[in-house]
Amino acid sequence: MHYFRYKGKKLYCEDTPLETLTGKFGTPLYVYSHRAIIEHFEELKKAFSLVDPLICYSVKANSNLAILKTLIKQGAGLDIVSGGELFRAEKAGCVYKKIVYASVGKTSQEIEYALKKKIFMFNAESLSELQRINDIAAKHNKKAAVSIRVNPDVDSKTHKYITTGRKETKFGVPLPEAERIILSRANLPFVEIKGLHIHIGSQITSEKPFVRAINKILNLLGRLKQKNIRLEYFNIGGGFGIVYNREKPKTASALAKAIVPLLRKTRMKIILEPGRFIVGNAGVLLTKVLYLKKSLNNKLFIITDAAMNDLLRPSLYGAYHNILPVVKRRSISALPLADIVGPVCESGDFLGKNRRLYCQPGDLLAVMSAGAYGFSMASNYNSRCKPAEVIVKGDKYFLVGRRQSYKDLISKEIMVDV
Ligand code: PLP
Image 1: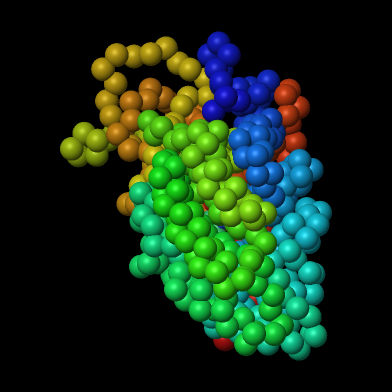
Image 2: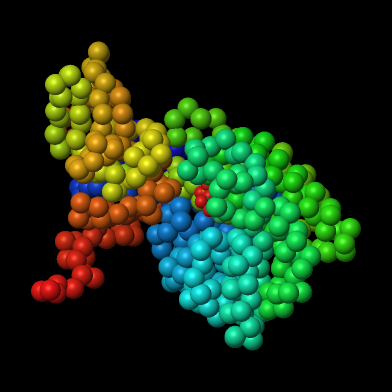
């Protein structure tokens, strides 16, 4: 996390002390580095420059409008998975021709919405969805551009909840079915099959699963070629891993070195859908220590004002996030191991386990690497308000998400005396 560094005892984002931000906006608070977002995007662009891909940032990783706008200004398209994300893409000013739309369960309304806006293409995940897209396109007398999401049945060696390219998962269609669909495309006259899509998982640290999956696609392309069928686009999804703890993910250039030669063989226009790689290490969650307590068996708990509703990844996947003091205190030898936990009424509510961290009530902690699947997975569980969000640019900072109020929590409810 190059843009979150200590200067003396204080942790900074770029040139701004994090303490200044909590003083101004309170806690829990998400803070993002503008420079990190742009650099990660540019790093991928450069690494894959030989195939000059369209990079469609995956909105689900962090859907804040200011982040979308930042990336759109850099030339990014967007990868969306719902009507809500299409609405965000519109509000952030993305041109429709750079929007790709995946999801195993697009509703008719969502398909209609995307079709009317003339998005670049749907990534269709089943034959029944293709038939639905065809019928809706027919109703509007339009032709829908589509890629077939293929499930290549490869193990991406990541957490099972974020593995999406194995045959057991719900995503995409098996290779033989994709081939059958393409061969019988005349049955879908209002759909134009323009390409293939894969997304084999998230937080993938090796190039090997990508190589295996792309090779399988190359075989399919070979068979199609024999039948004189050529497709224009190949979307290899996202999934590029980042460092949370001691992982050693392949760098973008090492990854590109392994897969670009294969991509060039396809002679297709390449699309990438990175999410985590761009924003994961561009954000932190700041929280205040409320209390310290010990259990009967002497376990130390550091209770913070951030919880699983603010950052779900530790509870959901047992994900590791480094946790650092926002202002370093003197180091104390023989620190006990502590669990950093939130106020939510679940034993699974924790931000970190068995950490050696010296702190006192009132101290501030930074949960690192929280830019991806952090705020976007936040909820109102326990009627807790979602945190505020700030983007830092050098020594300037901008509030890009207001903290929810209690009023917001009930704004959609109707008090009926039934
Ligand atoms: N594309 C698709 C279809 C996805 O489902 C996801 C994440 O789930 C992504 C791209 C982004 O993945 P990542 O954040 O790992 O790059």
